[in-house]
Image (cartoon, rainbow, N blue to C red):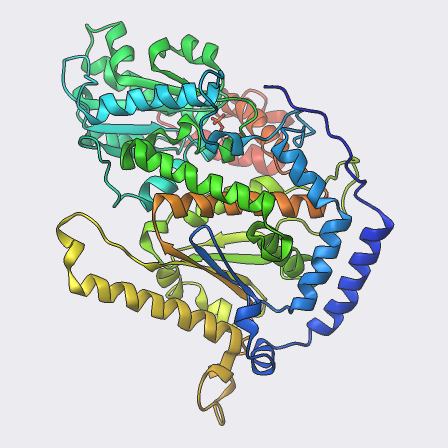
Length: 556
Ligand SMILES: O=P(O)(O)OC[C@H]1O[C@](O)(CO)[C@@H](O)[C@@H]1O
C-alpha cells in the first residue's frame, strides 16, 4: 500500500490562524485569573456542558480552567489549521508522515474484513496470528521435545513492548474462551536485568520466545533475543534447527531480516511500514495480548478502536472526544503555560498506562520543526509522567497540592470493576476496595480543583496546611475495563495526539530524535572495550569511560 500525496492542505500560518491565536491569547489573559472554585460556583451546569460520553467512556473536562467560550475559540484555531482536511487525509492514506514519505494507517488494522474475495493483507496476517494463538492455547504448539508451551516471552522494546505489555496486564482478568493460556512475560531492557532472572525460572522445553521488532535491527531486542537463543541452544545442544523452529516466533515489517536471524518462515508474522512502532499493538505485535485474552478478545479490542475511528471521523467537533482532548492540551500548554501533565490511573490493572502514554505522546509530539522545516516558536508536547494514582498519592501528590508549578492531571478509572473468573471474583472486600479507590480518585480531583474551598472550614488554617487548588484535571471513566473499551481508549489517545500535531504543525509519526543516540552508542562500545577513540571525546565522557574501564574484570 503506497501513501497518497498530501493535497488540499492549508498552509500552517494563515491570517485566520493568526486571528484565532490572537483571540485565544486575549482570552487567556482573563483565564489566568480564574479559579476553578469560582467557575463551578458560577455555573451549576458546568459538568453537563463540559463532559462527553462515547465508546464506553465518560470524559469530564469541567475541572479544566476553561469555559464553553474557550472551546469555541480553540475550535476556530483548529479550523484555521485545516484539521478537517488533515483528518480526511489521515483516513485516505495520505502521506501524513511527510519526513519518511509514508501514510500512517494504524486505523486500517482495526477495520472489519473487506467483502469476500477482495485480497486483504491485514486480514491475512490476522488469520495467521489466529492460527498461532490457537495452536499455543490448545497445547498443539510443541517445544522441540514435544512439550506444550507454558510460558511465552515477548522480547521487544518501545512500541514493540509498551503497547502489548500495557494491554495484556490491563486485560489479564479476561481469560480466553479457547484453551489454557500460557504465562506471558515481557523483556525489554538491554542490560539483561530482566531476561537473566526470568530464564533462571523458566523451563526451556516449554518456553516460546516472540521476537518483536518492526525494524528487526533494534539492538536492545536483538541482544535479548540472542541471550534467549543461547539459553535454548545450551539446553538442547543436539536439536539444531528444531530450537529455532519450535521456540521462536518473529513479528516484524522486515521478513528478510527475520529469516537472516533464523526465524522460520512459518513462524513469521508481518506488519507494514505504514504502521508506526508506537501505533502497532493492533497488528501481530499484539500477539501477547491475544495470548492473554484470546482471539475473540483481541477482535473486541480492534472493534472498540474502530468505533473510536468512526467517532473521530464523523462526530461534530463539539462532541468529538479526540478533538476535545487535543484542544484541552493545547489550551493548557500554549495559552495557560502549563508544561507538565500527570497521568494517574486509579486501577492497578492500568499500571503500565502511564509508560504507554509517555511514549505515544512524547515520541510522537516531542518535535520542534514544522512542515516548512522551520523551528517553531511555541511549546509542543508537555512533559508527561505518571503512576498508579493511589500509589502516587503517597509519593508525588504533595507537589501537585502544594508545589509551585501548575500540572494538568489526568485521572483514569473504571466505573465498574466487573471482576470475572478466579476465586476472588466474589469477595465482598474487593468490591469495597474498588469503591475506596474511586472515592480517592474523585476526592483528589476535587481537592486539586477547589483547594481549601472543597473543605467546610478553612478559616484560621496555617499557611502550610492550605490548599491553593486551581490545578486543572480531566477525568476519564471507562464504563468497565473491557477489551472493547480499552481499544476505544487507546484509539482516542492516538487520535488526540494527531489533533495536537495538526495544531502545532508537526509530524507525529516520525522519531528522528532517537536515531543519533543509537548511532553514537555503537562507537562508545569500542571506547569502553578497548579505549580506542576516547581521545576525541569531551572531558566528561572520556573520564566516565575510563572509570568504567578500570572497573571491568581483568579476564574480559
Ligand atoms: O520495533 P523496533 O523496530 O524494534 O523499534 C522499537 C522502538 O524503537 C523506536 O524506533 C525508538 O527507538 C520506537 O519508535 C519503536 O517503537
